Length: 176
Image (cartoon, rainbow, N blue to C red; front, side):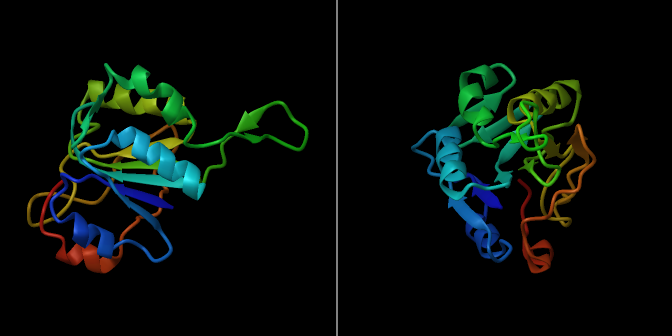
């Protein structure tokens, strides 16, 4: 499991401290391209699941280094496609599939809020080949009106493992 936390996320250090034991963690540097950093980390760790924590809006991930949107997704397609490697359907098969335990979880407010957001999620799925999970509303502290529940999953139901401890759920006091 790889967790990528953007530099612009409030209390990123608390999120890092609340990561599940054994997770690989990258704190994204605002001076470097975020997608490049995530790609390098995925290749270095051979992660089967990727959790990205950054600010969001409908169809847009707001990284400190620049936004990833439905309009510029094609510029990052080759990198994003390399995050998960398809596996043969059966030995010596030319048909390749993704195991169901591989997924991409996007902890970003309002990412899948409307049709633009859902199209963004579907387009990401077509690049990575795994189930993509996101939220329609605020992500984070209940006190701030948020939730850690990712209520949109494409194409498979949300079965992603939550990357943070239960203690973090109780103490994190911001929304992403």
